[in-house]
Length: 354
Image (cartoon, rainbow, N blue to C red):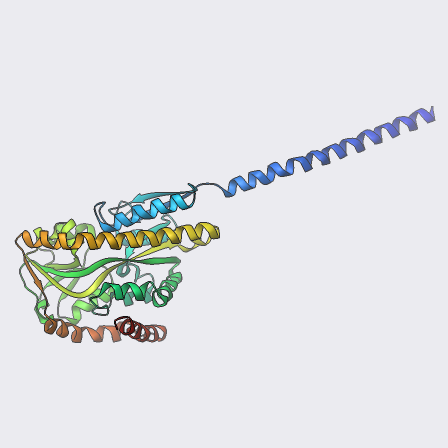
């Protein structure tokens, strides 16, 4: 009887041991499936929410479409880009805030709108810092100097991707033709909400008035402001020349858009997907620049044909503005890194202009 009990116990032990072995084998067999599931998770679709302010007929939107095309193609469909043009996701400032908070992945915004978030970027908007030759601007900003400046955007939680040139800004007024800084005295000029632009017009004797972009046409029409500054394409596509009789071209500054991404989101992408985004930005940037070149002369001629007074400042008149503008450089780009950078930027621009 005792022998039978021992035999039964031995059988039970063997059964339990065999069950544990089978369970272990089953666990080993399931491991590849688990790894496959993890691999599948890594291949999930990446949705990029991309906002900007310009209409769908603008060169910037052409560039945005190219960004979408390249990002989706080079990622083999892993990336999907949803475009939100014409300030669909809020005001200019709200879109920058959206990128900073991560509710918007990527946005293309004027450097002046970004400067309240990262002070160092304001160098882009200093009056009369850029030459008339846009190729020189491209060479410098697409090179080491521009890359260094983009790196400063990390102070605000942004990943700087590139510079999208929107053209040289024009002065426009309702009645007053501008020939020298003193002609701005007493005029209310709309500016973006950027300290550097406010100081620019104060240095020239004007009265700068920050006004949201969406309210600008009505502000000009109703006389809330007497004038404003924007590039050719913005003046034409928004019909500002319908409510402004004087259009003055003086090359005092550029409308420089900066492509920014949420830094945490960008750094969370795999290296190959980061490269895809960077390649798409470069392709979009170049497409926008090409589109701008194709349309600027047409826009200029259409504005002239509308019957407004279109005037280009002479070299002598520009020199008066340059002289009145240099104190703005010294006053506002005055921190240690900023002073070092701007001096190197002056040298880089001079070298590229040779």
